[in-house]
Image (cartoon, rainbow, N blue to C red; front, top):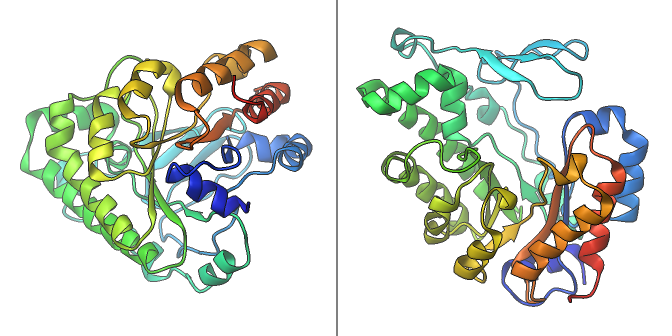
Length: 338
């Protein structure tokens, strides 16, 4: 069975030979732990393609990080501060400090306008792996990066006209980006937003459904309308919006299962959506023993893995996580079901 077939069977609940593998790494792993990463990928090859052949245009505002710490400017003009080598950092300087800045702010359309998608068809044709396209699409997070988190929460509470203008400007850009990808040969398109705190959503489910869900629905329609699968990632406790993600047609969701009641999620949504990982990266992967990591995988498998699909063996490798714990994750996914 090819990796692409394996993923497709998992997503359609059609009994793959094993759960597909997917490994994420924080920036410090490929930068400072290259040998360990190469050994991990040789021992446990992933089923997702590393390169989809696309090249976005160059942002007119981006300024790269020089050195291991300091500041950099992203594609949208948001200034990130990096205080520790190997991490993404935090946005500390916001382009839209007041609503007076909104009128002159423009999304980085050069990313799309100057994108080179000519290599995508060849990349898809030349691999037996499943090809998933990453995107810029993250409306809630991008609004935080542009306004600041504290200010955005006040914007949402007050509901001023400008917050809708900002949302709609971003949404237009994201729809254009997804439409660009929808014309390619990739198997899936991915978008994201970190919606959860430790125990609940960062905003009320009612506000999420009225303000953001219509955007997500349109994203899913664009992706599914082109015959591709919809992959969505969100950190934190997002149990409240799981039914909405199922309703709008998300194929696979990556969420922090260990922040929630895994067994309750399985009871309600197993067979309706694919659980794209993950294994606890707050405690188990950085601080747990190998046996504790294995027990965590077994908990997920007992709840979600009956051999028919609907699960992807994914985990995120943090900068300081022991390689032995990451290896234990993938080894445990290979064991026969108990």
